[in-house]
View 1 (tube, rainbow, N blue to C red):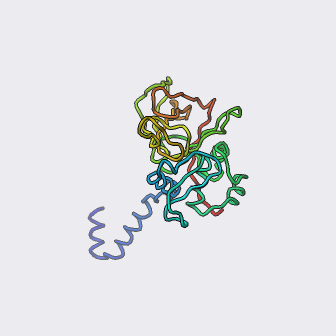
View 2 (cartoon, rainbow, N blue to C red):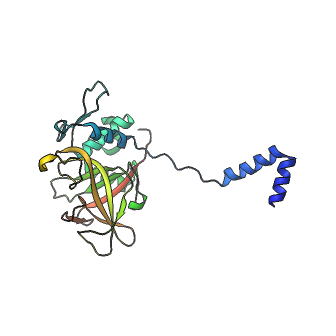
View 3 (cartoon, rainbow, N blue to C red):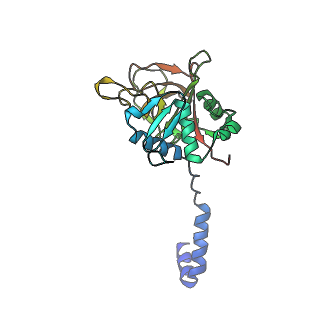
Length: 250
């Protein structure tokens, strides 16, 4: 067979070569669709350059990037959900009306983002940490009785399977999840908001959380950090969803 192909190529090089290449093109897998990650790029740019005194967890949110829209400095005052909303606006040109039309709120909270992921409304739901990638959204939903609706964070890279460490949960596998978010509670000693003298900044920063999955690869819980003393929350108490932004005209 190989001899026949080579002989044919010598006799009719152009026609056979095109036929072979056409066949290879037909069997080659198509490249995966590009994943939108501009919001992660803007978040990392902010955290890499912001001074602690210009970084704050709080209401009446805003974010500025030096050199963008006339801003002279990097500054942030957001909570977790308003941080994500501001990044989506900056990254994709969306407005308050965009969010009103999409999620029935100009400023959706963490629970709203969580529910949108579950409903795959503007998101592709990612069932397993093994399939999660940089730019995906981690959304937690807290009980109605909690003072906060939940928490949202952006994954900086794919989750990493870790050797089990406290708190242990029998029958589970643990993943470290590298995030950028805006919070008043740091994600352990490796958190970028840690300052000298044991002090902590609030606002935007980098940290690591932990996700637990059972033997069927279903997410069953999470911890706020990688520390052994952190509290484990099962999904029966605090729900967990991972979603990939599905860009479309809004």
